[in-house]
Length: 409
Image (tube, helix red, strand yellow):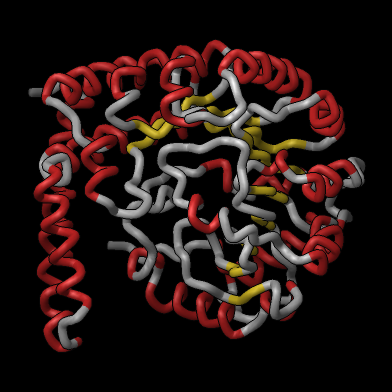
């Protein structure tokens, strides 16, 4: 396998947890620093980031990043930062990007350039109660990013290509709304914004009208009101009709401003037969539909049985709807949607042959617990055997999926 040297350790500064932990992305959870303990500048060239850059050069991303990472699968094209070449050659963002590109090419571990992609999660709190939320327990701790960090952000916005407020629900918090409202819209910085589309007030739309936006991502997890209530609202104060109104406003905003617009759904046994409906809903708003198999947030047998156990009839119908969806998104030129649907077909194949059986899932979970207590000299050879079996299963599933997508038996 060709070594892939991912750019994230050179370009991304992400605070994906309101406890202040810093990582290079949302797929690799290696902690590289904490904004409660150090300023951004010290973390950026501290031990965590310099070691990560060195390791990336020596080993490549496949050696230590999750095999499920969308970047490794050719997805997340919205993270491509090559558009810096279109910016003002004498502007601070273009100058910083060119210096950063040179430092990446030279494989430097200590950088003079600043982060080009800044993502932060002010809090995990949210106005919804999503069925698959991995942040639910942490949200009860009421962590929020420190004022010192929020005060540092404007300096880094001046040289960052992308600023990405995350959540929870970003528009649930006045400090985030104030940060966006205070931004100097005359700079070339662009914003990546994600929302559940329930709290987009007139004030928020006034800010969005002024902001330079790269991508607007709406997370829905449903194609209709019934599934939305079952999977996201669950007793909270939100309604599907308002979401549809807000998606219409975002679609109109896209026409005026020209940003990427995506809507996302995690597939489970409740909405399993809504793939076709969701694709049509997204395309109706001129949005790119991103569908992926839900992850079991706390690896519980209860969640697996309730949301990740499918019937043979469901598997067959999901295959049919994926095939129909691929034809539609290809016709619209939505490359990320195509990758997501192809990966969904692959992951459903692996799931059908494995964890779709709740007993098998529970057995594997128990085996992992036992494995963690084994001596290291026993763990290493067992890990190699398991990895080889996993790779073989993945290769078989890929071949089967490719035949299915090519229309072959």
